[in-house]
Image 1 (cartoon, rainbow, N blue to C red):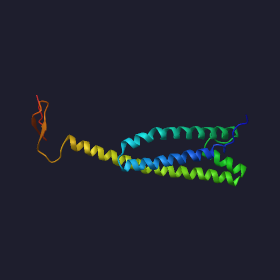
Image 2: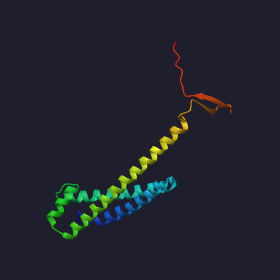
Image 3: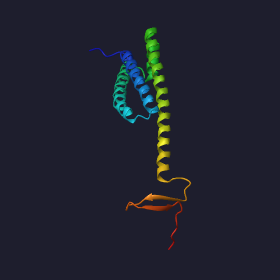
Image 4: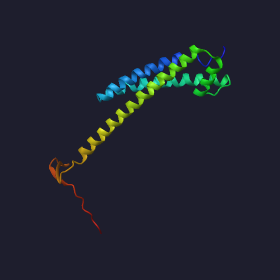
Amino acid sequence: MAPASPHTTLHDEIKLISCLIDLMKQEQQFLVAANSEGLATLTPLKTQLVEQMIGLAAQRHRSLAQDGFAASEIGMTAWLASIKDPALNATWDSLLAVTRDAKELNRVNGMLINKQLNNNHALIAAMRAPSGAADTHFYGPSGQTTAVTGKRRLVVG
């Protein structure tokens, strides 16, 4: 079997990253709606796509190294320059473009996740210690209300 050429994975990589972008758009909708169940369904699908993408990129990098180029995106650029095929250059440019789109979606989704985490932390903090109350009543272990003051007493001795 002849070794694969560095360009043989490009179309599959574009398909996979396009599918990932679709999942990330769904993820964004779930994040905005705070739909944790929906998010949970996407995680294994995203993981599977990313693993496949890693495998294809590794295959491309091995092929580049076999051809004497750096096993990286820089090596791919050099390889494309050496063969001077406009169609392959256009395919590579398409892969880079969808990769940039995915990176931007990932950035935005990360911001949404951080916002949700901050909201959750604020909510938890509010439930633990209500602000502005000198004396607050809570139910104790006996089921009776107990007064809790916001002041701590220091015991020295």
